[in-house]
Length: 350
Ligand code: ADE
Ligand code: ZN
Image (cartoon, rainbow, N blue to C red; front, side):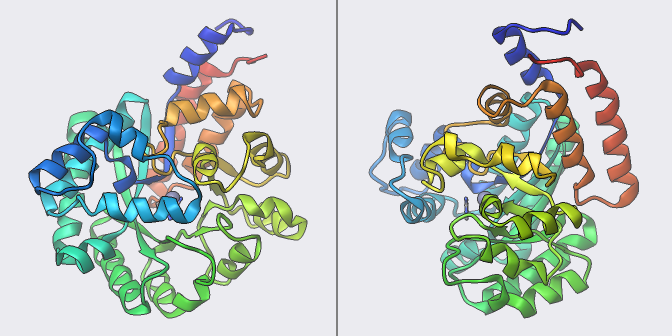
């Protein structure tokens, strides 16, 4: 492959590269069409009737506004078949972007609390969809189950128990923490987190997104496998050194951070600084439908805005594969396959 590429070629190269996604919410990936389909199916009135209106709805004033709308819109997911449908569609779209491995986050608590869908039925719905994705596309999909921080400790135990049950079949690999971070540190959920990690489930919290570095420090005692977002680590050199030395990757989601007001401007976004500090970073979508993005767009942004070369992007993808929460032989296979595919793309982007 030639060593200098024009913008259009570069964009096509980024699209063609094999990818790994480690931070994408099943619910936040629900396509506007599918959202409207569920709204109609369940005779809901959420005040939106067209795809354009849905897209307009997904404009957020700030982080709290985003979470409020997220809760209202994901309430359209009311049955196990809905869960399977959006999970399957997420897998199909990942395949279309050359994603080879996908860890998707899903929050079972609201579906149990709001709709009474038993946790085992939710697990079954996710697993069925992942099996179909694998059969139809070859994309391997695993799940991180998120506890919503604003909800009580009891619910976190229920989610942790679902993680442990799901880990037995290999479908679930992690326990996450999502939702509103301020005033809800990970330490509040210490017992449930320890129960999950003692039973072979990795801890992968959102942290350092809506609060500063203290949100990440608070998670470290639980040995997190990765941190969701974690961008506020950039404010604390001691924390950066810990993340670098312990090889704790950050799942960075630049467009999400812009859309939720976590950063005011992409020029302020610390992705490049985190990388240069030697912290393992990956690029992800978070809630692609709500933030009008996809993984290829996030990778293009990494190149066009943050100045990553194609070779650096390939390195980032390999770091993502290294932090996949798979049993060692499977992680090794994934890395080997990606390394071979990415060898084709090691060109200079400048
Ligand atoms: N749930 C879905 N997206 C989220 C985010 N970016 N932060 C916290 N919780 C979330
Ligand atoms: Zn997230």
